[in-house]
Image (cartoon, rainbow, N blue to C red):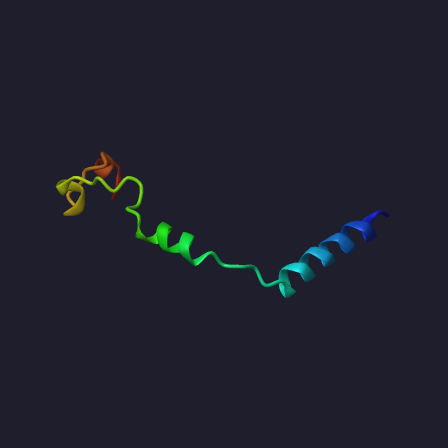
Length: 60
């Protein structure tokens, strides 16, 4: 018992998600895509693939 109310709420939320048209903030999206990703200060060693993570002795 008690499942009816939970199922009705799930149905309501699903219907709202299906039929709603959310607004898209294009300016915010452009700002997010144009910024440098966090941790973008990679060393030259990291970029060329010679980074040693210390686990080579344990791999087969």
